[in-house]
Structures are given as C-alpha cells and as structure tokens.
Length: 278
Image 1 (cartoon, one colour):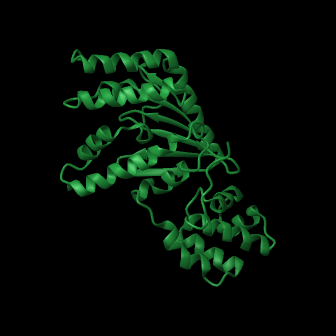
Image 2 (cartoon, helix red, strand yellow):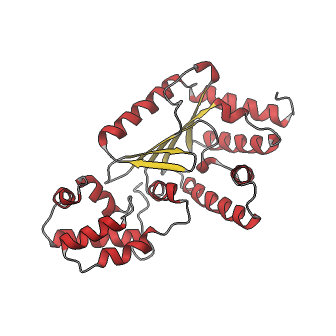
Image 3 (cartoon, helix red, strand yellow):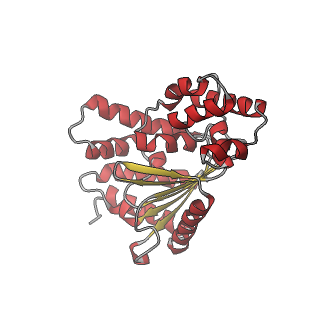
C-alpha cells in the first residue's frame, strides 16, 4: 500500500514541496544541483519536495534567491513551520506521518504510538506536574492523534524494542500500565506491530545512550531521530542513519524473540491485574 501523501490543499508543507519541485524543474536544476549552493544534499531537497522535511526560513530565503521566486518560499515558510508538537519533535512527528516503516527503541516509556489515553495522561502529568488540565488534555489529544497512524491495517510497518524497565515501572499506576500492556499485546496478536523486549539479563547494550527512531519512506531517503530530555535531532546523512540502523540491529539481536516478548508482556500485565507484582 502506498504511503499516505500530504495533501497540498490542506498541508502548507506539502504545498511548499510541490511548488519547490515546479520551480526547480522550471530552472532546469536537479535536486543535487539545487542542494549544492545550499550546502545540503540532493536527498534533502527531495525530502523538502516530498514534505518529509520542514523548510526553514534561512533555506527558504536562499531558494528564493537561487530560483528567483520573488520571496515566495520565505513568505510561506512560517505557515509551513506551524505545528501542534514541541519544536524539538515537530519535524520528526511530521515525517512519522509519512513513513512506510518505523523502527523504534524505547528505553524508558512506552512509545507514543502505542500509548493508551490513561497512560499518556499519566506520562504528561509526570512531565508537567504544574500544568493546567487544559494543557494536559491538549497534550494527550495530540498524542492519541498520532497513534491513529496504526488504524491503517498495514502501513506503516512498526517494529519496537522495549526495555524491560518500561514493563516494570508502574508505581501507583499499576492498573494504567496493565491496560497499556494489554493494548500492546492486542496489537501484537492482531499482527499489526512487532515488539521485542530487551530484558535486564541482556546487561550492557548498544542503546544505553537513549531512544532511537528509524523511519523509511517510499520515494525519499530514510531518517533517524534521537530524542533526549526536551531535545531531539533528525538525521538524514546516509552514514549516520546506517550507524543508527546498526545500533537497532544489535538491540534486536540481544532482545527476546517476539513470541517470548509477548509472553513477558502478558505475564507482567497479569501480575499487575492480580496485584502480585513487586
């Protein structure tokens, strides 16, 4: 099934990308030739045209100069940059919506695409203990909107490696975590996602430095996203993406098999439900 395209009539980024392709081709330039004076790769220009990357104002101004578009891209860049997500995550979330494949390693919390409403609310409240309920409601809504990606039965292919710590860290939220683990198990059993658990017994491993998300696309190069506390960085350099892909491969090699992982997820959920977990 082809990826869900951005609609130029409703997405400013898609509109800018479509206009960029027209203007570039009118100027008789390849993607690589346009990228050279911008000090970016031809694949980066392709990502702008496909809508998988956000056009920043400095790039937009230089494009206007090179393609002689009379400030069109600079004027429209601000509208294309608006997002309901935090700045450090906005570009990754927009790319995620177009991805045909997502591979994610999560060391601390259940990935946003797999969160239930109750778990998302508990996480958002833990992040922002003094926020108003309206703020929390908006954060939860945005997270659940992202999770709607999995409503499609086949795209994107999602493969997650979850650290065992995620399954155990419940505190006072045992019922909430149990519900979310059951939700993950349901997605696994319906063949919608692939999940492996990285057990404590794996010891030191390649993902100790933080979370990792790899995204692949039809017609655009892959991306890697690294996230920290209030920070995030999206990479498209082929060598860097390949390095992170190796990290993910090492994690899957050290993780439990999908069958063993499902058994652990359901066992821990049952322990929480029976109030037996310690």
